[in-house]
Image (cartoon, rainbow, N blue to C red; front, side, top):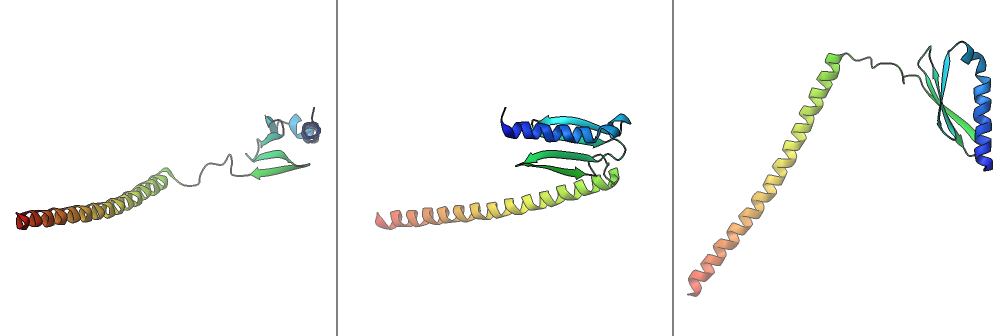
Amino acid sequence: MPVRTLFALTLLAGLLAAAAPALADGKYQFMKATESRVWRLNTDTGEITVCSLAGENLVCTTSAKAATPDAKTYAEMQKEKAEAEREWAAERKKREDTQMKIIDRFLAFFRELLTISREQEGSGS
């Protein structure tokens, strides 16, 4: 077994052992994510702590909002979605208008070439 894996398992075991009193009252739930990462859920607050091995250090990060619902109402979320869709549609129309202008320029160029070609055929005969 590589030293790094052994070290990671030792650190994770220490973390779990330190949390044993909290486990007894059901405050924390642990879940093994990978060989060097564990997730800890605080069932009281909803805070999720992710601990992983970075070199020789165990690094833990938390997210207090992980289990907290969004503070916006459904109507607010729908309004934001509709506004985003309007902005997207306006941007799309602007892009399409620009593309149509480019196509119009190409068509005008080819019409001009056809006109010049016909004039040269007419004068050359």
